[in-house]
Structures are given as structure tokens and as C-alpha cells.
Image (tube, helix red, strand yellow):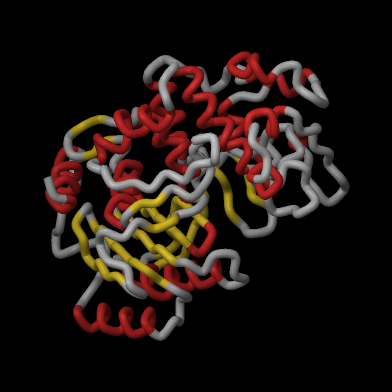
Length: 355
């Protein structure tokens, strides 16, 4: 089944009228030509692909800088949202309780260094909302849990569980004072632990579990899995996917867990995933279950937007109110302007054409 046919079937099952002249998105040959010109000029950085689906139907699909429809894009932390979906599947399979402590699954790593009762209460929701008690902050080069420190050691589970507890200096809002009762701290190591927990709870190799329970039902067969020297796959970043595959993950969320006539994720999980559970201080976002959340101004007013977000400016935007899924892939890794350029693309190309 083609991507177009699969998306049409998914829309019909969900009661969405596909392609009513793209009622919720205005597009034209003139707009397409102007957008191509702006992208090719580098206005939005080094863009490799754009795919816009309205009601599940491709409205605009274009490739740049040597990429094509078969190119596998290094999505960096977009992978985190997909790991969150695997947690949802493990919960649906009855293998994992999202509110139960994860420490019993890591008996082989115990006793933990810097042990504390708080470590033994960490659950999947803590890690999906990046609000656990560990001193783990990828945005602070001095953090003991910074992801760059994890990558240079072999035992990633022990790296996480042996971290000290985080402190709350005067400039950081503690959980007791934070909205939603959680203090966000961006922690890739915690997401890696989530994937490890899914593997141990299900008793299945995490790659095989992902392929059979998530990727294959979505029609995603061509994937690049980054690995460590010991064969451990990265679950917090670096999964390589085509633009069409990225769109399939966005559509799965938009359609409440259904794709191509098949229920993959529980609808309740998809709803909870994009509810705000923590506030990201500074950038002005809220955070769901590894989804970035923000209200954005469009041509029809303020609209809730959920994002899969990755280094380089990689994005999958899901605008449920207007039946839109938008993929943007870029390769501006580690640059100062990568995220600003991605949001400029959204605000200047997508937002004005929402109808």
C-alpha cells in the first residue's frame, strides 16, 4: 500500500474527510514556487525535505540539498517521541505500568551509586516528562548527566542510575512550586532508560519490539538504527527515517493511534501524550510525553501545536485542530540558528496558510 493510500484509509477510519480541496490548508503552485525559492536560497537553513499532509493527503512534498524520497534523515531527538510511543505500546500490552517504579527492572545495576529512596520511586512518567529527580541536564555542560558524558562510557543504564540527585538553586523552580508539580530538565539518558525498561518489561529485544509493534504496522521498513560498539541502539536520538515515515508517526498521533485501518496505540495514550505535564522554562513550551507543546498564531487564530523536535532543526508538527501533519528535516546540527530557522519556516510558510 502506498503512503497516499495508507493515509487515506487512516483518515476514512477516523471519520476525517480527506482532500476537501485541502479545506484547512491553502496551497497553490505560486506558493509552492515561492517556498522552493526561499528554501533553495538557504533562508531556513539547510533544508533536506518538507512534507505537508492536510487531512492525510500530501499537499506539498519537496526535497533539497541532494535528498530525495528515499533519503533517511538523521532526526536526532525526534527519536525521543517514538520511544515514548514504544512505552505506550508496552503499557497497552500489559507489560509496563507507567506509574510503577522502574528500579526493580534494573536489579543488575544495583546497588546504585549515590543511592537514595527517590531513585526507587522513578517511573516512566517521570522520564517521559523529563522531570525525574536525577541531576541530568543536556542543556548544562557542567551537568553530571549531560548526554555527551553518557556517550563515552559503555554501561548506559548504570550511567543514569548512578547519577546524584539534582539540586534546586534559587534560579530553578522546584517541583513544589512548578506548574503541574514537575520541574523539567532535558535528559537524554532518562529516555534511553525508558527504552531499556520497555525491553526488560516485555522480555523482547527493543529493536524487534519496535519493528513488529510500531514500525511495520506503519509501513516503515527502511530505518537506520544508530548503535554503540556493544550493539546497544540509541533510543534518545539519531534514528534515521524518510520524510514519509516521519509523517506516518505524526499521522498516528493525529488520528488518535489509528493508521491504515489498524489500531496501533490506545487513543487514551495519544491524548495523554499531548497534554501538558511540565513547563520548559525559557523557550516558552510545555511538555507532554516526549512531545513539545505550544500555542502558535495562525491565519485563523491561536492553535495548539504538538512537535517532535530534534537537533539540526528537525521537526514533525501535528496540528490536530486543522488535520495537519508537517515534516521538516534539516542538517544544521549544533548551529545557533537551527531552531529559530525551523520556527520561522512554520510561522512564515505554514501558519499563514492554515484555513
